[in-house]
Image (cartoon, rainbow, N blue to C red):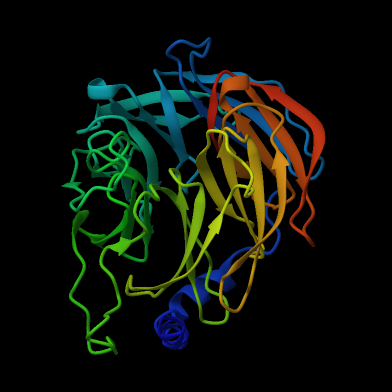
Length: 403
């Protein structure tokens, strides 16, 4: 009960510091474009893939065009499109030989022209993202457990790194998967950078300097820490042992409140926290399972995403091979499961909700397919459309709006 009271008190305190983020939400366009180019990351090793692929996507009808090779590169397991729409960056996941590469996007054809590549400065980069200004690229290296910041130069090339930092903390109880730090996801939220570390059972919080491109420790808690015997915020955020944080979804500000949803790969769960503009956490208020009580097979949770309308959360199971759909309580952020839908293939390592929120594209890595589902915007439920695209080991989709 005391934890609940602290959680309620904390969310009340969010209104003033989060006003900036509420303004950002209000500035978003009401009607996103209907035509997109979708880029697909995958593995080239032991597959027929030659690199990064692309297809046209009609968000009104759900039609996916024939697949085309956009640019050759090795093992582009994660790709991101720059906010300008001019460049694409890829994490080339190749163990100790891993790199991060930059490409220019040809506006009419969508083809990729190689610009440059730099060493990943760690093993197996698995997630990339941008800072809020679009001037820096963040990379999370899974096997080595470190994160890197690269400046993005005026011509789209990557400059020499401005930050290199290894996550620190006590490892989790899973001796096979949690033998050390394993950074799996990285995201900037207004100068506060969060890193999901599967090996440490933590979401790390770092301060980011948007001018120098450096990462550093968050400041010590301030006078708003109401309970010195059981203090929050927690820096870093610590989840229950054996959770294995893989990816994180962060809600937009609604009613002066914001929530963080931590996907646990190892125990197939979603843990809910409150989050402030200062990067402080409250909770957890809930830990939701992604599996039925009677399920006994192998499973690894993989991806998590919030619908653009903010009302539903989706998470994928590998092993059970399904997408779990939750309704989000708009007051307290808690989850209620409303569906568990088979993906029509094996190992949905990733899925993508198109920017309009009409469709969900499930990427079945071991079936070499992208299977499309229509989203019911009132209930969040998924219905297969019958549209399927054959792609070698698809594990990442990023959309680029077409003019």
